Image 1 (tube, helix red, strand yellow):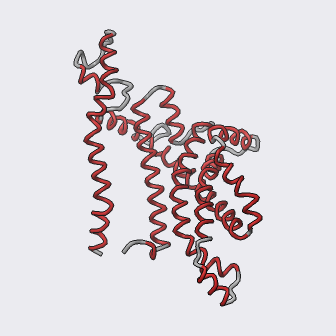
Image 2: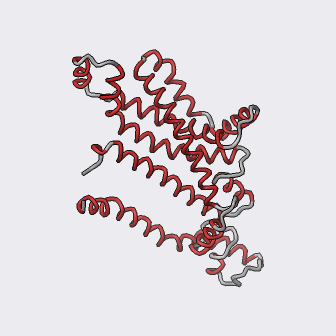
Image 3: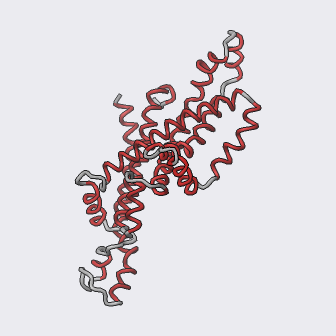
Length: 292
C-alpha cells in the first residue's frame, strides 16, 4: 500500500503540482506584461484611474484586464461564489454538471448500441458509419438553437435540450472507441469460444466486452470533455437561466473579463472532475488494467 501511494505521489501528483506552481509563478509577471500597454494608453489619454500615475499599479487595476492579477482573480472568485444564488457559480456549476452527466449517459447508451451493430453487421457499418462521421462536422453552434426551437414546439425545455446536444457531441468517441475494442479480441480466444459452442451473447459478455472496456473508458473520458463543451454551447446558444454557459454569455455581454477568467477556471475544474469521475469508475470496473 505504501509503495502504491508513493508511486502515485511521485508519478502523478508531484508533476501536476509542479506545473501548477510554475503557472502560479508566471501568472503575476504575465498579467503585468499583458496589461501594461493598455494602462499606458489610458494614462496618455488623461484617464483618471484609482492608481494615480503609477504605471505598474495601473496595470494591476484595470477594470477590463487582458489577464487579471492574482488579487483581481481571487476577488472575482469570492464575489461570484457567495452567497448562493442563481447569479453565483456553485448552483450554475451544478446545473451544467447535471446536464452534462445526463448527456454523457445518453451518449453511452446510443454509442453502445451503434458500436455493437457496427461490429455485428457489416452491412450496417457500410451504411451508417459514414453518416456517423459526417454528423460530427455539423457546426454545433448552429444545431443547438435549431434543436431548441424544434423541441420547444413540443413543450420540451430546460435540461433535456442541453443533454441532447451534449450527447450528440459525446457519442462519437464512445461509439468509435467501443467498436474498436469489441473488434480487438484475440483470434485464439474467439476460436476457443467457438470450440465451446458459445452463443453470441456469451461471446460478448465473456470475451468482447471485457476486452473492449479499456477502449470504452478512453472514449468516455474524451466524451465527458466533449459533453461538457456541448452543454455549455447549448446554454449559450439557447434560452437558459442556469449554467456556466449562461453566465459566460452574461459576462461577455458586459465585457467583464475578470468574470470570464473565473468562469473559464470553473469550467476547467468541472471538466477535470468529470474525467476524474470516469477514471475512478474505470479503476473500480477494470482493476486488472491498473498498474500495480
